[in-house]
Amino acid sequence: MDIQLKDRSEGPAYLQVRTQIEARIREGRLKAGDTLPSPATLAQKLSIDKGEVQRAYFELERNGLLAKTVGKDFLGKEKSTYTVK
Picture 1 (cartoon, helix red, strand yellow):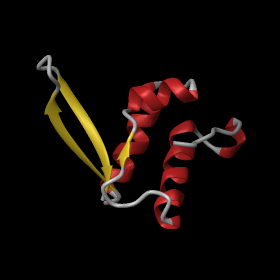
Picture 2 (cartoon, rainbow, N blue to C red):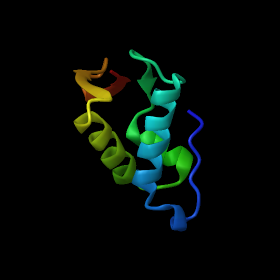
Picture 3 (cartoon, helix red, strand yellow):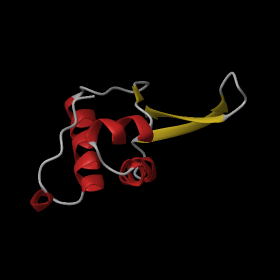
Picture 4 (cartoon, helix red, strand yellow):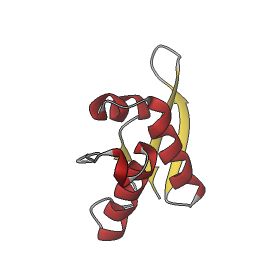
């Protein structure tokens, strides 16, 4: 995913992430069924706290744009997947 953060004058990191994902959905660059990177993966790529990405995803889920599914990986650990609705 090609999200890039600008300086803080553009708003908090979670808001920039949320806004950019919303724009990609509206533009059709993200379509229903597309999977987003985990919060940890995206946070690492953007060099921000994982909580910032989790908040962005939560708000997108609350607004009906993302769906979160929880399952178990092959080691039995809980794993969340985020997909575009």
